[in-house]
Structures are given as C-alpha cells and as structure tokens.
Length: 430
Picture 1 (cartoon, one colour):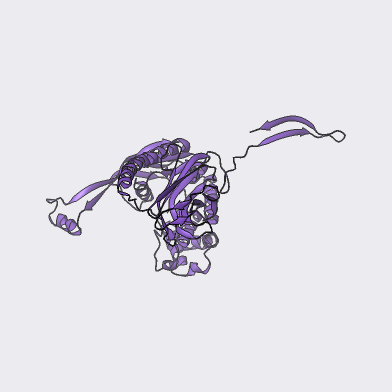
Picture 2: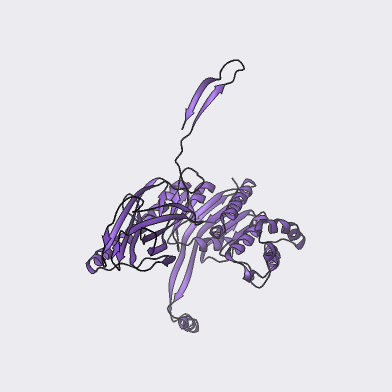
C-alpha cells in the first residue's frame, strides 16, 4: 500500500501565564525570568495512513485531537516531530476557519480555492458544484459574518469536498449540520474514499466511526492510547468514559451522603425549565445495569432512570415522569407514574419523593436527551426540565430510525413449477 500520511514523534507545547503581564516580563528578561508553565497538548504521537484509508480519531474533550489535526493540516507547527504527506490536503477544521467574515461566500470560495492551488479558471469550473452542494441560496452572495453555524459548515464542507483532495481532514464539523446535510456529507465521504482519497476525521459520534472507518485511533491526555479496529478502540474509549464516570459517581456518592444529612441537593443542569413551583426536581439520573451513570450505551442495554422531587406545597396525587428525545427533538419514549398506575398519594410540603423507572434501551443509534417532570394528574406542571441528561446509543449492527425493534429474519427458497405448487427447497433464519 502507498503511504499517504506519516506523523512521526509529534509533540506540541504551549506556555501558560497566570497574568497577562507575566508574558511581557519574561520576554524583557531575555530568558532570565521564568513566568510560564509548560502545557504539553501532544506527547510523541506517531502513525501512518495508507492511501484510501478512512480513519477516525476519538477521545475525551481536551485530549489533543484538534491540535493534532491542525498540525497535520499545516495551520499549526509542532514543537517536536515531523509530518509528511503525499498530495493535496483539504481540511475542515473548527467552525469558520479559513473564512474572512467580511467577504461574501463567493469571495471566500475563490480565496480558499486559491490557497489550495486552484487557478481562477479551475475554480470557475468547480463553482456550480460547490453552490449546489452547499445549498444556502442567496446567502452565498452575502458576507459570511451573517451566516448561521449550519451555513458555515455547509459552505466549508462543499469547498473541502469538491476540490477532490488526496487527503480530507474533518474536525467534528459535521455535527453542526442537519440530518439531510449530514447524510449528504457521509455519502460524499464514501464517494471520495472509493476514488482513493484518504480521510481522517475527529468525531464523538461512535456510530459514524463504526459505520465509516476501517481503523480508529484513541487519544487521551495528549497521547495516542491505541490504534486498531474501530470496535476494539471504541471499547477502550468507553472504558475511559466509564472510569471518569466512576470517579464522578464516587464524588457524587459522597455528596449525596452529605446531602442526605443536610437535606440539600446539588442543582441540576438543564436547557429549559418551567412550572408553577409547587414542587422542584432535585434528582435526575440515568444509570446502567451496574448503577453507573450512563453516557454511552449499547442498544438493548438495561437502564434505570431515577427521578426525585421535593415538594414546596401539599399536593394530592402528583405524577413524576421522564421523556427521551433524539438529537432532532423527536420523542422516542416517555412514561410516568400515572401511566404505570403507580399512585404516589398525598405529598406533603418539604417531603422528597423518589421514583426509579427500569426499562430496556432498545433505541436506534443516535444522540439523545432526557426531560423530566413532576405535574398534576391533569397535566399542570409543577416543575419541568428539558436536557437534564444526554447520552449516546451505539450498536454493532446498523439500524435506521429512533427505535431498535431487534428484528429477526427468516427466508426460504422455493422451486418454481408451472404445474405444481412451489416446492420448499431450504430455509434460512437469523
């Protein structure tokens, strides 16, 4: 196989200063005063990509993924190490990178194409394809500073993917686009791959890495932890996530013990809240079969949802429930104590009522959010919180839709006859 990209011993150091003036003092001392601390974003990272590889890079936030891609793309210089590549690199990095906000979309198209080595005539030939792919209408002729984040990504990907690069680099940008655009981008990535383009992309979408990549690289604390088959790498990534959650749970357990003694609860995070205040949600936790906080789960895994409400007034027959939505806001599943015929009776002021829901997570591969509520039987909201928890569902088998119905399949082969009833030859079941 032909080597397309070689990263050898790459490290990147940043200097951090406690105060802005420390940088000036250090520079004026000509090295005699040391006012900075060293932060190594990358430590001795090495790997090679062959022509036509599709490789995903995954890891927790702050592990050095984006820094690595910037060094490969040439927008950042390493402190140590070298990067070698064969052919043209086209990169889709952080949102709006490479765009002049004062220029129109058209002007930015020509500017970016020229930076990639295209002549005016070559860009003229590419422009209709870029315009059609971006699909942002008359905004293409408006200053980029007026664009939404989705428009940025549409135009940036249209440029990056239309120039037929030898190496395409993508840094988490596709997560901004809508479902239709994401599908179009993934299809375009597959087309480029079939033509021999090498693709390297950062994503937290484990489903996309499973579906697209033949190889994955796991980063953590600036180091390359493993490099191999996506399934093996994602399993190790999940272990890192679970370890962080175990640490979080241990801290939370200590906090819960303190809260039990004092009657106080840690404030919940949420994206939207409403209600008349007769009750307040104080606990909203999704856990796996081992009781650990669930953030990445396999479809079909057993789950529990724990919801607790503290009542600020006497309430008769309160209802507590939760609702799961996918990343597009479509409701996937919801239930409550009333629907499950669990009567909570009379709740007194100052009392905390906790409900645990047990269910099996037969959800489709996607990212999900959870809303929780406590309300009256007739639907008057005492407290309603959207976005109290976010989690992802993965699967070894590709499924479509928001639900995984865990279907089985069977088939049979019949011998056709003009004079007789078709005869069963054999049968297959999976």
